[in-house]
Length: 323
Ligand SMILES: Nc1ncnc2c1ncn2[C@@H]1O[C@H](COP(=O)(O)OP(=O)(O)O)[C@@H](O)[C@H]1O
Ligand SMILES: [Mg+2]
Image: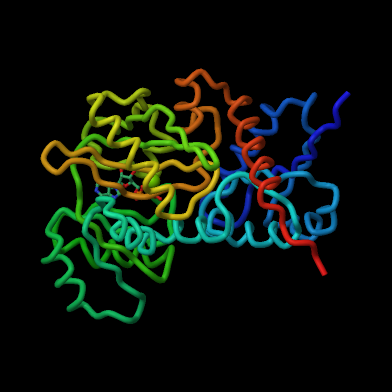
């Protein structure tokens, strides 16, 4: 009998996406094959000392964490120090992908289309900057925290009157806020997976309920009328281009293992890239598992693949021996 792989399943954490993360952790715990894995669970909110103490008995970590302190490189840095390999992006990729301004600057420098934007810092910019940004980007525009997730603190603003309130709301989640040109079109998300050789999974199309113009937190997790269609109903040419952009975004942001890039397909302006998620949602109903299912890969098989990619990468890039 081969030895079981000892997995630290890490979920929970302290971001606004804690509940989603715990749910993903529960689903992953159910789906991991007990014949192959020995699973121990950790919640960064309470269990960091135990994780450090038990590090020597862990072969790999499966991170089901979203948002700051989970998806942004901090926990990845801790795991690097402890010598525990984990699925997905390392410190750099996680940090730049979580920071929507840094990510957009990297997209731009790689010729990846992304909506025009202005970034504001709390306390640093006056009202003048706000109205200037409104004029430059035009209305409607989108206001979002730089390091957010699940649309928390994100608003669609129709005119200058609503701008200040939306910016205040976004500042509740982060000290930097993005104002972004609004793109109408078909919202899609493109997962990629692999180490050196990246493959794309089928695109998922997100259709918010009638009348809703963007995919907010309610629509994401609570509104049963939101539809997710896989493969997305776009032309073959658009699907090909979106897949190329998802791969380009993954590489531009120094991602590793897998990622899922959110995009909007506009009839007039083509495809624009909104953001890249380094730890996409991980319940069987989430977008990446849906795309995997459409490609014939069950939720359990998806977890197997992510763990295999992580162990393969760790073998190729061993960590320097400690002291
Ligand atoms: N520039 C934009 N134009 C149109 N819709 C947007 C734009 N930015 C965000 N949205 C909407 O808001 C949602 C959340 O934005 P996103 O940038 O993906 O951040 P996150 O998913 O991390 O909250 C998107 O799924 C999309 O529906
Ligand atoms: Mg998103």
